[in-house]
Length: 149
Image (cartoon, rainbow, N blue to C red; front, side, top):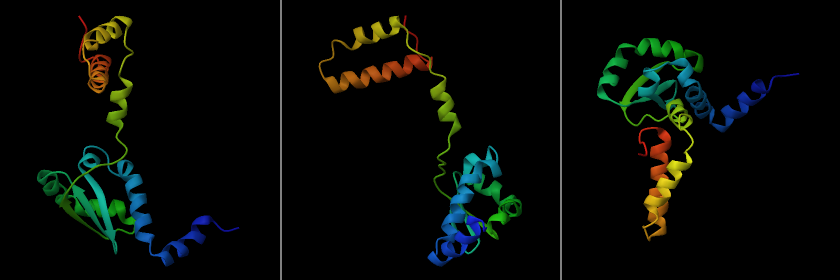
């Protein structure tokens, strides 16, 4: 029996998507390879002939990462990366644990809070505006940043 990876590798190479697959693997492993704060301020952008282009979110981080270029290349050498370049750009990784923890910190609304919100929005005639106000108030109260008196 042969491993699936050994069978797929030549097909992926023939299709010309080997660098795209490698880039996807780097993106998937990014937060485990590079811990915070680096992983929050830089992200893989493009891979071409072993040269990885990293998007960096500020000039300060761009300058700082230039000092660690060799270390970054060493960590990524398992993916076939031989050099790294940096550019200012948007850094957005789909895995954002902070956003999930903020959502999980929300507490359920009490009956008093629900009643207050309904009473506050009841004079509003526009249904779309009323729905938006209700959603915003519920979010503010459930986050714990706003209290009902």
